[in-house]
Every structure is written in C-alpha cells, then in structure tokens.
Length: 159
Image 1 (cartoon, rainbow, N blue to C red):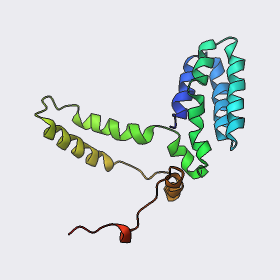
Image 2 (image 1 turned 135 degrees about the vertical axis):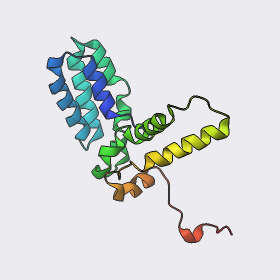
Image 3 (image 1 turned 90 degrees about the vertical axis):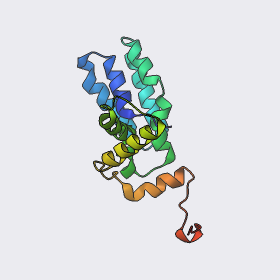
Image 4 (image 1 turned 30 degrees about the vertical axis):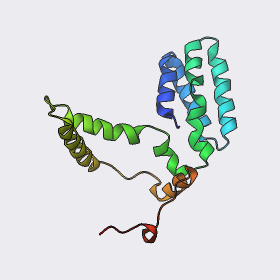
C-alpha cells in the first residue's frame, strides 16, 4: 500500500504555523527523494523528534503511516514512475469525473441504470486522461507486484 505523499505533507503542514511550512516541506520532499528508504525514514523521524517539542500534533501526523509513504522506494521502481505513483490522483481523478457527470441524476431506477450511467461516465472521463509519466516502465511495476502479461498465443481464442 502506497500512501499519498502530497496528502502526508499537507496534513503535517496543517498542524504547523505558516513560518514553518517552507522548511518542513523541503525537508520532507528531500527525504522522499532519497534512494535509500531507511535513510529517508530516519530523516523524517529526526524531523518528527525536532517538531515534537513545540508541535506534538504535527509530529504525530508525520509518524502516522510513515512507512507506507515509502512503498514505491521499497519496490525498487524506476524514478520515472515515482511522480504518478506516489499520489492518489490516479484514483481520485476518474472518481471525481464520474461524480461530476452523475451528480445531476435525481432518480436512479434500478441497478442496471446505475451501471449504465457509471460506465458512461467513466468512458466520458477517460477522454480527459493523460498518459502516465514513465508509462514505458510500467512493466517494472507489474514485475514488482508479481504480475506477468499473458502473451496472445497463450490466451484461448473464443469464436
């Protein structure tokens, strides 16, 4: 499970005064960019200890789920995949598109109607998608997750 780093930074900053935002944001982003996961975790833990004295809620927010913000690093994925894989935009964008397209429906007439509307909304939303950064390296993500692509010759043909 990969937690969204953008939301993690935002949640920590919400607990700090504005004067602290720039420095903490830079320190957190720098820790996430480190190739060595353990070093990144150590730097963020050091930051949590530092801010804990005056802002215990910010330190608690930083520590909560911290390990899960480094899942991408632990999988050893190429850096080209990091920008799109460390956030939740890949999930939130299609869902907000469906919500926007179905929000005016006042009366749902059964499950079939819901399925048609949602499928149509996903198809309409799909037209606004952009290509994933580093899409050429998605094979590395599939390999890290233990998924392999079936070749066309191994699939059964249905007449």
